[in-house]
Length: 274
Image 1 (tube, rainbow, N blue to C red):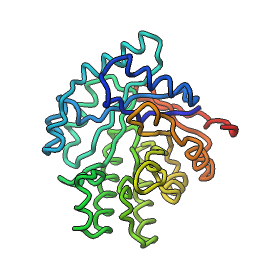
Image 2 (cartoon, rainbow, N blue to C red):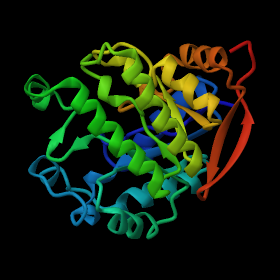
Image 3 (cartoon, helix red, strand yellow):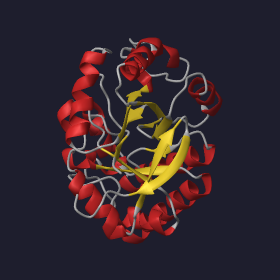
């Protein structure tokens, strides 16, 4: 079994015709379980959760149009799961819960992209990194990741060390391991799965999310995994999955999770021949 639950179709219209391009690529890659997880900030229905100008000007779509695309595709025999990527903000748990419970999602990806008003992975805000201590940023990021896991609101934690995206990485390995340990412990206690995401290979950091040491720590705590590409265009669906599968096996993972109606089941990872 292979999964790709982290796919965005937002560069095109919410039509079955556009979605078919992603479906074809998933089939080409041998991905049996895949789904769309649009950024929640795109939707007008999340205006009460997000509060900054960067997001506000991008909240142009409706959940209804997104959902209709998914269900029309299913009517045409396309086996696509209905997900969403929801940014986590401390103090907004009730609003997030109400929103995600209002729709028949198959899975919810929770992600940390923001430290207050700073989008840590945005090119246009990259200069903020040079104004801060790197360790302080990492601590703030992992504080939010831990709180996100403890909230119990999410099925999958997305790209859990996204904070490394621009290669601002502490050199203190003991510090990093402490952050990894507390993240893995909170994820395990809440039963939240994590992604092995190939998206990092296409970013300045040039490596899979999460780092092998963080993934090994999660494995030690029995944190379940899915495979994801974080594709924003059809050709990136399943991209570099040979590397993701290799890393998963190297760490010790032999199973991945599959989600339907927010219920998880474990299946064997793809055969060794992949």
